[in-house]
Length: 546
Image 1: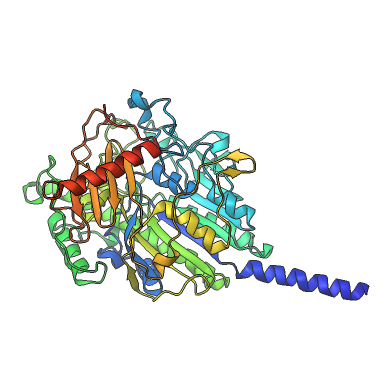
Image 2 (image 1 turned 135 degrees about the horizontal axis):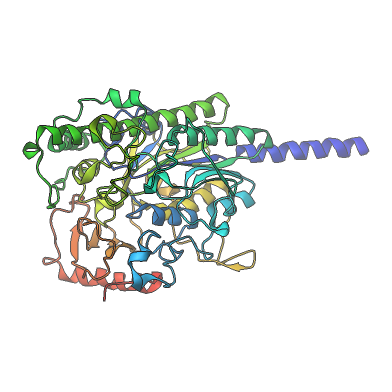
């Protein structure tokens, strides 16, 4: 009898391991400030063979929303609910310039105690949980990603940083940042480069946990291609001269590829360049053109280099036998960044070298500017920081294992999704019950995102409820194909709460470029959407202009 008991115990243990191993791994890869059209599979000329192959194996989403900026997006990802409820009604960097928001619930500038935690929920369900890269959701011990439920984590706590090891004596903001591993501050090595290092770390964490028999949830949160523009020299050389023709020509070629492909269910009028103070390419001096072209060369190099590192990670998963059972999701955290990041950050610092020859190398501190951001946002209007499609539309490439859902490889999904939908999606994939409004006796906000599994399988029916968002007094409300928004090109001012709304109405089924304002033609629909907006404001606690 004792022998039989041992045998049955071993069989039960083996069965339990098999169940654990059959549950899919979940790999989330997030780029930082990547535009909608930068990937090859989204119409871009930048070489991204890894992500393009992933799209061939899986699906692309043509209508996936994020928040207008990075930390609000990350808060929605981690909590599964609206950023205004979980502390990121605005960014921590903006709070000092916005007295009316200071002390207001939901505007703490960091993720608050009301938020559920995606890694903690998956960890409780038997997953190993890993992260490498940018956090940007708070620096206090209780806000640290390690305390938030990641078993192993190497993180940049700040919103942006030099991609090389920071210069010790520089006063520039991006050279004075905090790296932390498993809750403890650390220094990075001399040969540090963010994209390589984060990839190395995540591979090491996944590999160390292989013998546990548990599935993993891993978040690779790159800081590429966020300012400052830095890339390894060989990648920069690869793109030398490729952007000499200027903004208009590159953008028109992207539009032609997109409209000739299958990314959208039908062609539409692309957005034009915004009316902002900026000289056209043909009015730039030869030196100005060389400088602008070099910035885009480095940006392209950053995206290419990131794609190579994603390839390295996927090759590791294949070699270790983990790839087939891994759900892979790739997104950006917001639209392309058009603001002048570098302005005001110690431009006279003696350690900064922004000469043409040094752009992209250690010590340079530049971004690629508004016009190139509009190229990255093609074919949509405006850029990061706005509620226009160019600010909140992200590429989304998903590789779905057969055990999760049946999808047609290489297909495009036109159904709508948003970043807060990923938490309930991942819980469904893992077979985890959705939590309610408490967690271990603590009161939590309910998860309001919706699982995307049906959407990924081709269900393009619209949600029955309106979806709203707001950042920097730029709101939107979307119901079905109709979107009401108030958007303007970022002007660099931090305090925006004194700017009144200027509502415009668009039918996104016909006009994703948001080129024709239909508010005068459909006043009843405007009124209906404004009612939805008022409900959203009350529910989310949105602060509005006086």
